[in-house]
Image (cartoon, rainbow over all chains, first blue to last red; front, side, top):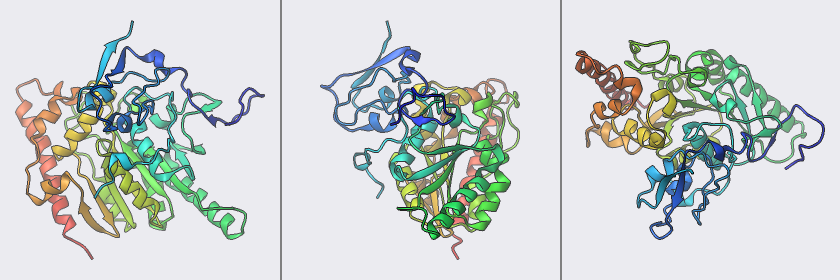
Length: 85
Length: 312
């Protein structure tokens, strides 16, 4: 990953947060109940934002947009959507 | 056997924090495509939601070299890139493996505006993959009607429902005699992954169309994106098939519907979940409108069943 702090160049470099800290768009936050999780990885594969860790089921709340696809697709109901404070 | 989700690679080509809407089916599909293609690829983008989701300069949300090109030039630009790369390879200026060149284009850039350049690229049989993520409208500019919009659907330019059926673009591409054509959708990631891997390893022009249910254009709750994609396949509104060298085979769960082993789910449940249809299904002509849409779907299933029997 190259530094972008140098003079402006009309070329973009791949890095996280290209749309800003998109977690601020969220109205509801997905919360994982680890006891119910059966490691099926469905939330990981369907997450459009790639914020869910495949094995640990950790969610990167800095970028999670709170769409709720993971909660709808979870077969065991381990993910619930809770209103942001 | 389709690849199991647990066997998909860890590669992430779509980076977190890009500019797409929450629950966007295009980035969902692009993630799976990225797992199949790997980092050695060049991406071409015509104006579409995926260009808007790239994020702001100097950051880029996709981990590929990407070119933003004119709307009508998806086929010709990709042809130019692959021809240049092939010449460089021939002259020994390009070390390593030849990168996969693919265009990631919406239904507007495939069905309507980009059709002639795509058709010409298919006729030349250039070694590219054309992906069409089909959200059945011009969603990026505020949901206008496109050639992919199905009959009876509300868009801002068809406020009383579109009165023409959509065209079968994947079949049109098949009739160009290209080596590989496939349709896929976001609800079946293993199926999509296999098709992209197959396309990557086939020389010549490849066309893959991915149904992407856009919650904004289709007017449903954004958490139901994958559910809607699944319902489209189960009701027969979207058929999953692939054609290698012109021989069509159907994939699950479309295969039992085509074989007649299982009936497609009635389309009514699928329609009523989407605001673009159900806002027009409140009057006295609702049953007639549903029958028209069901008629289109039944015709498409019957046609594809017979078309698949032709293998020369």
